[in-house]
Length: 283
Image (cartoon, rainbow, N blue to C red; front, side, top):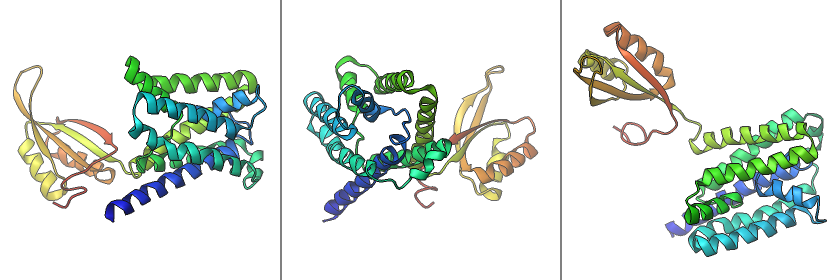
């Protein structure tokens, strides 16, 4: 029963994500003629030559890629894309018949920002539901398996070609708004997949590591790990402190470390996911 509920939940999340992506294209991107990447953008180009609706072309191309993925990669991968491949064209047709966001046509900048947010959030939900958005990523997986070409390279080349072709045939300004949609979508997608959270990872190089350890644990309530290191110039052994903390604590930790050792060497990075004891598991 539990497995069935989890499966239904994943299908619900994938369906909601697909609806958001279809709404982004059907309510904003296509009505305002923004350049679109992926299979939708390719379908827009083909529709200028063949008198077929965009949703029909999306379905036909996705169906072909679905069969290609099934034949070359396997049914497990193919079934992950089946729901999206069937649901997206139907919802796209439905949203294209609506005029819910027609007023946004007077503000293309706001439209592109909203469309990017919807597209990124929807794609994130599909991925969180262990689904696949289909399209060019199927072709990428196939070429990766058969020829060893990285999936990201295949998708980048395909999307870039589609966007460029639309820019040459439909105007540069619309292509710029299309690129903005993709950029906002990518940013939103990353935030969705990381639940909007980021932590700071700090590496501390100091001979006074024991004093710093005490301050971090007792005063700052920050966990840490020691790594064995060696200085490059004098070849002396050193303990490197690795610690992860919320961004709100970073400035206080820096001040505390420099108060103990003004010559300490610090490296700070943003970390998009932290899990385990002390974070997702209680200490």
